Image (cartoon, rainbow, N blue to C red):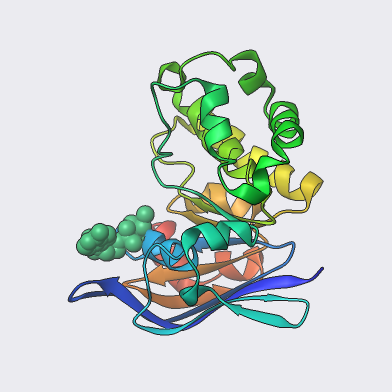
Length: 243
Ligand SMILES: Nc1ncnc2c1ncn2[C@@H]1O[C@H](COP(=O)(O)OP(=O)(O)O)[C@@H](O)[C@H]1O
Ligand SMILES: [Mg+2]
């Protein structure tokens, strides 16, 4: 089943503040696409537009699947999750006073995912053995890296085909960043997920991305078809490599 997400000429923001300006990106099935940009450039706003949390003022957000075009701007977030798109929010947003397992179960709240709970829980514990070992531990008592793994696993509880991951590296020690990024790649490779990952951490994101967009002040300033092309780009050198 071939599917892709198409964001086309989107304007979006908060009240009078316009954050995204005629922004277009595309994520095709099976790709890992990095959305690179420093703080405040609109990465999270774009992810929220795809999830129906922020409503664009203009433009299109589509899920194209087997010839059908579904307009996501007309769907609720719950419906969008039901269509197989899940978000790992910035800052993880776990329930710290609930256990690992309870947090995972909350990821399966939508009716379509409830029937798959047993299978998805087994899948999460296989993908993240540390979570199995800590299933009765309070989420808030785990390390930052473990909490990020839990946030990713919770998103997997809704049986998604597309995963939107918002800054998984934030607040983590470098060794943990590598581990989380490697895990996202493993999920993509072994379980055929399509991934859009917002990151400020250029070096880590480009380790696993097939291609990338650079967002500056709510506009796509550069689109690289390969990591090689991206690394050779002047804008990238200036903003990310200090050259
Ligand atoms: N809820 C909000 N209300 C008003 N402004 C917001 C809100 N969320 C984000 N912004 C503003 O939108 C801009 C882009 O933010 P964001 O999408 O979070 O960027 P990034 O994820 O790249 O750091 C920033 O200037 C930020 O202050
Ligand atoms: Mg953000």
